[in-house]
Length: 238
Image 1 (cartoon, rainbow, N blue to C red):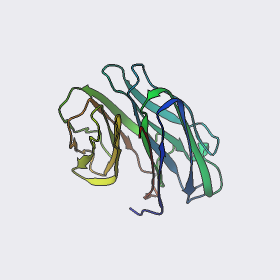
Image 2 (cartoon, helix red, strand yellow):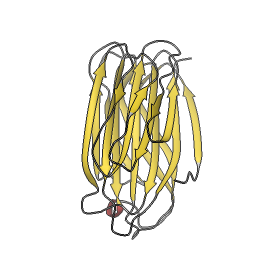
Image 3 (cartoon, helix red, strand yellow):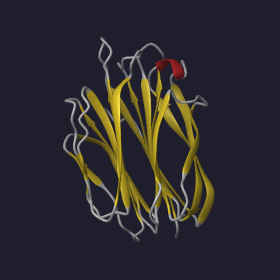
Image 4 (tube, rainbow, N blue to C red):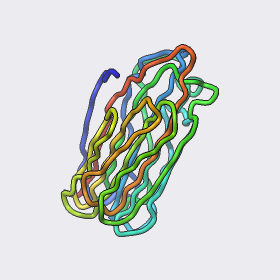
């Protein structure tokens, strides 16, 4: 694992009809290296109404696949999704690329966190062998143990209506990213990585809603490596 760059940012505000995110990611490899780019996003809002996702792009290109889940009850709403682009859906050249997505129906005190990574040596015929999702509600922390096989990249998301509750997670294997935005609607995102087919992630706080998405990937015959780039952002009420 090699972290090649890191960046963070913050925008303060009160109410947003839509949150439009746009940021740069440095694509390290040109076509022909069995590439895969993965985007993980967690968003939360105090709005009583389902959040939506739209306009997910990498260098203006639509993703190969999106796996999304929406928490549809409680005082804090959450949407989290996992998108990836395989080699044929990525730009042919390396360099700085723009990543974008829109979270709709945000309402009061929105917050979002995102993380993007580049992976090489991924089987392009069947990149994702299998996937699993889970959504939980309540006020107690949860432990998630997806067992899928092969290389797993899993994300845990969390949302809380408690001011300054900082939802974070710990992993049994390699942690790629863990970050949270605090405020009236706190939002957390954590990403873990395992090569033995099983991974366990545990949230560290009592939360209004939480869930996970886990995807396993098949390696190409030539093998490969993961090149993560941390990009995280928060929007919150001041």
